[in-house]
Amino acid sequence: MEILSFDIIGKFAHFRKFYGNNSALTYSIPPRTTITGILAAIAGLDKESYYLDLNSEKLDIAVFSTSAIKKVFYRLNTLMIKGLKDFRGRLGHTQTPFEVISGYKIDHDFVKYTIYLRNKESEVYQQIKEHLLNRKPIYSLYLGLAGFLAWIENPSILRAEEKFADQQIVELDSTANAKQVSQIFFEQKEKFDFVEEEKLPADFDTERRVIKFNDLIFTLGGKKLNVRISGRYYVLNNEKKIQFML
Image 1 (cartoon, one colour):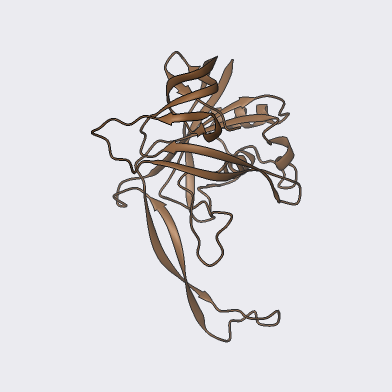
Image 2 (cartoon, rainbow, N blue to C red; image 1 turned 90 degrees about the vertical axis):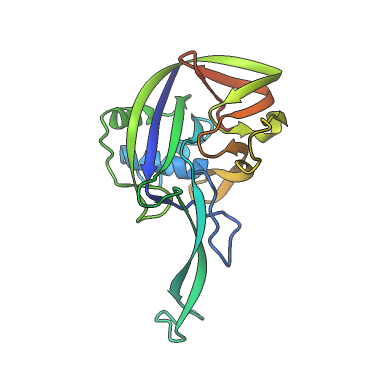
């Protein structure tokens, strides 16, 4: 079985949480919807079509937070607009909290995620694969927001073997599907602040409405996720183990 992998790297990232209204909170990892947008930019896919071409039924996606990251709040000085006729912000400015992901040391650290892809029925997978392996994306890449520029490194084709766990302990180099996890294991020397659980948007319809979510458990900073799971996972080149988002 073929798995296509690559790293996406940038200086800063922001993946806005869908339920945020008065402040811009960010997920720690890119949601599936963000990753499909990145893939569409790589292959130059039409904005109105890729929602269906890259949905969960046609393409499997896994993600891993490879680098150590931190979140910092900044204040954005934006125009205060009230009413349909006020587009110049006559009332002045307002400051909005805005959360940004970065490396621990901004002067030389980067934000890095490893993405894994497995084609099921996507007709545009070959386009994505060609542009990835040649490192020639059609459009510029961003980590969530325009301005947070990103680039591709280490595009690779891996061989994978499908496994099925029945309440077995597996060390994952990816997120885990929360509904399939019955236990998380920690070493005593480790702190507990690097594991998160989130509900993230997975698929859009053609009007960009979220129609599916992923419930995921994941680590940060390149740490493996040691869990007891039931369900499918994949062994890559007899080494790393990953689980695709359901």
